[in-house]
Length: 282
Image (cartoon, rainbow, N blue to C red):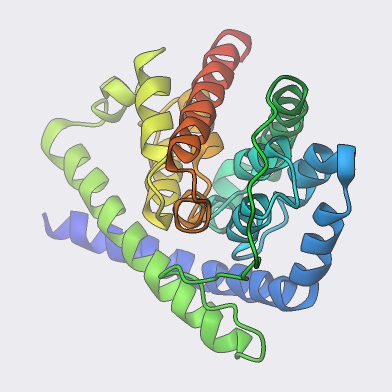
């Protein structure tokens, strides 16, 4: 058991410097580009889903939350909102970059490209077939209230990067310890036999986990994939539905709660369908 604890601590110690550097870059991008990206999506018009899908993969805090606010004011279309939600990376990208030697840059780029392409395609289809009702909304507030977001203008990017690193580092520490303990107790092949690694059931459950409006969801999904406990297709299902705090903000600012539920169900359906398709193709 001491070896399990030691291995877990060594793993997290090795990751922390890379996590910190990644979050530092993300915070810099947030301060420099957040307003420009939101403005670009607002002016996107019919190209909104394309811009939302492309800009959604840019590593920054709060973009999905901003999209929820813009949709609540009907500044962007439902398809654009869906494209942003599907393409946003939340905590996935920092974790993958911190494990770049093991994962490979090619795999990271493939995941980002798939999320963008699926988001863009789904966004255009949604706009083609679904026309939400107009809804009055006096103000569009820039909300950034989630526990893991410290990207207010004027704040220190160093402090924000440190806070992000500590929070996500703790999540990774807990999950890695659980996985290492499972290996110690049950043997090396236990992860490959978990139900999350099974076709169809894996996609259904992973997409459900992705809907949890918290950074923990993407942390869990990414770590399970890296440890071999989840197939690539199932992981993609969860990462597609994982919009971070975007869904939470949507329920806060969009008055039509039934519509919000339908949007989540739509995301879930797209995530599962995409995962099942990848299960066949990959």
